[in-house]
Amino acid sequence: MKPLIGVSPFGASRDGVLNLAKQTAEAGLDGLILGDGFVSTPSFPIWSGGVDCFVELAWLAGQVELPTYGIDAVVLPARDPRILAKQICSLSAVTGGRCHVALSAGFWAEDAQLFGYSFPTRGARLDEGIRALQAALQGENFGGQFWSWETSLPISPCHGVPAPELWLSGAEATMHRALRYGLAWQPTRMSPRRWTENSHQDVGVGAGVQSRGVPDLHYAGRAARIPRRTARSVCRPRRNVRFNRTGL
Image (cartoon, rainbow, N blue to C red; front, side, top):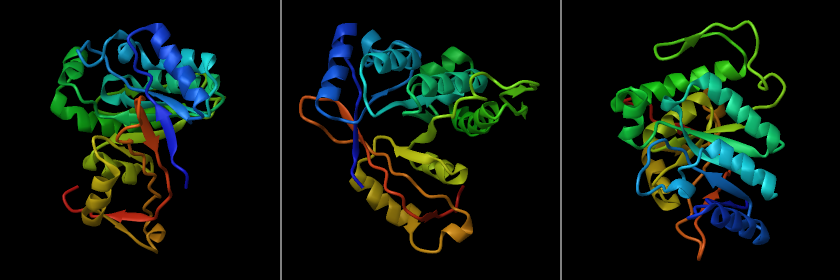
């Protein structure tokens, strides 16, 4: 299967970001990808990740026509799943369904401090957040440790717009979550070679696994470098997989 190449349009200014997005389209690449975060850090100036990812990506989608758009990755423990459900379905609506949203536990402890939760609990919050987001998308009640609600009406526009494809983004622990929830997995800080090496230890690829109820795995990796461009590749062959459940 042909890899898909998406560019993260990091720039020092509004015009710089827009120019990079236009160059992406002119080069015949496949999409735009933005990250998520809340605190101001030296690695993410205002126009290089500091602007809200949903607002910026919707703006870019209205300016530059591309096959796909993505958020890699939403810091789910810091977001209310009800609001996130509305945001991702709104993004799906304005892009005509040409988008995906990856969910992550988060990378910066400062995000956890800002929202008043313990950074070591981010994995538990991610687990519950996935279930809560799925309930919000379906207009269902939810009761959990971190989020709970009751509703008599669906969240608009989730009742009328198909939700975008959901991925999970992270390392080995998140890979196991992706398999449990039947979602695509995007390795972070892991080259395709390292993923292949780890798969021999943690993931067994073989026939007959579907009967065990283990979902297909999509591989979403990052390109090491594309000259003069910041880019990521999304290579998504479908494989039957199983994993070692020991220690989960």
